[in-house]
Amino acid sequence: MPASLMLLTSFALVLGLVGCVSGFLAGLLGVGGGIVVVPVLYHVLAAFDVDVALRAHIAVGTSLATIIPTSIQSIRAHKAKGAVDGELLKLWGPFVAVGVLLGVVIASYATATVLTAIFGVVAALVALYMLFTREGWHPVKGLPARPGQAGMATTIGTISTLMGIGGGTLTVPALSICSYPVRRAVGTASVIGLIIAVPGTIGYVINGWGKAGLPAFSLGYVNLGGLVAIAFTSMWFAPLGARTAHSIEPRTLRLLFGVFLTITSAKMLFDSYHLLF
Image (cartoon, rainbow, N blue to C red; front, side, top):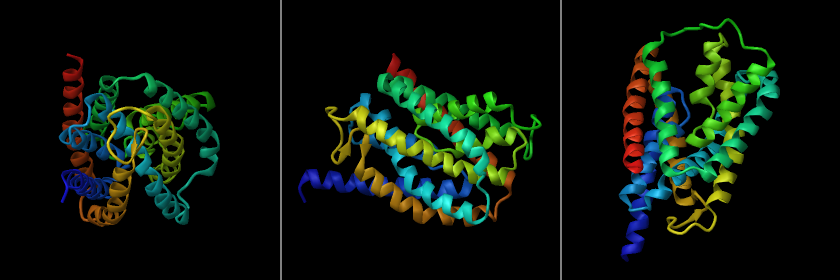
């Protein structure tokens, strides 16, 4: 087997394994796979000697692309259970989209150091939320007025686009803090994930178009090999994670996710510091 073909085969197999892990954890922990895919894919790209200046952008862009098929699958399931809040989406949807556009513009100028630092900081904040808040903690009694919700939606769209994650990681905690029913939060977040992923993916394709040093089968910063391998295997393993979740206490799941994010954020922040100095 030629060395180039062997390299591509190894890359596809490793990314398929990434999809298995991210899909399982997404089903187990009830979050979008992007929070798993981005840091793992970032280090897989490093192992295959992809230019350090490109790794974060490729990881984020490819992660956003993988969210599209999984979000569609998730939306169908949540709509069937009546867990999607159409009225909230009418207000939030346009502002999430504005946030995505802002995120794409920022990403076009951001260095690898900035993207890894943003991921590390936000992942650390979500980890703190998971580790140190109790189940059913609702400090705010109701969603803010329309301007406040517009700000929340725009911020979620922007940060999610910079991190390569869907709607669940930030939307569900934000809504839950405001006493919003968690099941409807999860269902509505699946639609928000699609609103983030589609324009976000297009933006990363455009931003990375023609860049030198991209891996084979890349459209801009979106690697098609990674997209196919991760999306295919994650869709198979997500149901297994979901079934496993029913045999574990919710608090244990929150702690597992919090520990995972703590380790992930620490590694990404370390890499960001290393890139800076």
